[in-house]
Amino acid sequence: MYVRSRMTREPVTITKQTTIADALELMRKHNIRRLPVLENNKLVGIVTDRDLSEVSPSPATTLSVFEINHLLAKMKIKDVLPKGQKVYTISPDAFIEEAAIIMREHKVGALPVVEKDKLVGIITETNIFDAFIDLLGVKEQGCRIDMEVEDVPGVLADVTQIIKKDGANISRVAVFREEGKTYIVIRLTTFYGEPIIKTLEEHGYKITSYKSYNDFQ
Image 1 (spheres, rainbow, N blue to C red):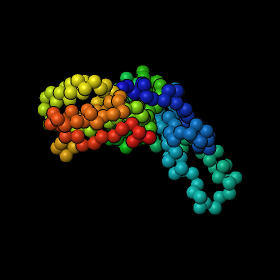
Image 2: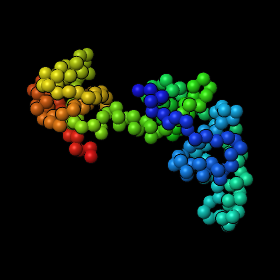
Image 3: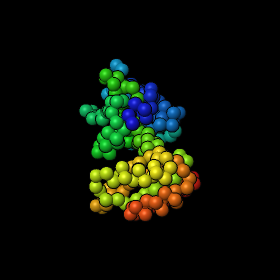
Image 4: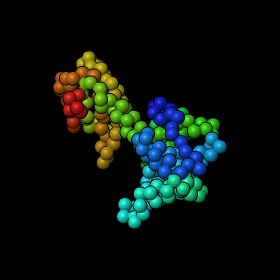
């Protein structure tokens, strides 16, 4: 799965000359929390709702509403954009997991997507969550079977062959390791996984969890 397929295209942007008041209004209007900053059509920074709230007067201020609005209308993004700010970006042809790693390592909630020095989109933590949900097929009809397996070559092939012989259709497969143990998560299109569980147990597999589609509703 590529960033291109999950990013928000044509994101709302601002410039260094945009006022704080206008930036806040754009965030409110479009229900977003981040705004890429462009200069001569090139990305030079990104501001978040948190950045703007830090420079806005607090609720305890003695300023009047008129004075607050006047202040925010005078202040511009260039006044609050950190000098030398490191902007982490990603290519639209990168894998979605690469975006997740960069966001996790650098503790950022979004990455501008840049292609040939041009901003073409933005990918956020929400996009990553949606991709994760789709990869596991959580919203699809069927059931999920989790099992503990030995971490040896051919184990996944063996499990899938057993399920194939039972006539079930696999829609998703995931493998993960935790505390020295290996687990396989199988998502099936059938509502009834009990017969397949029985067959897997007869072949020596330890079922650790079973959930039907309705458990996710």
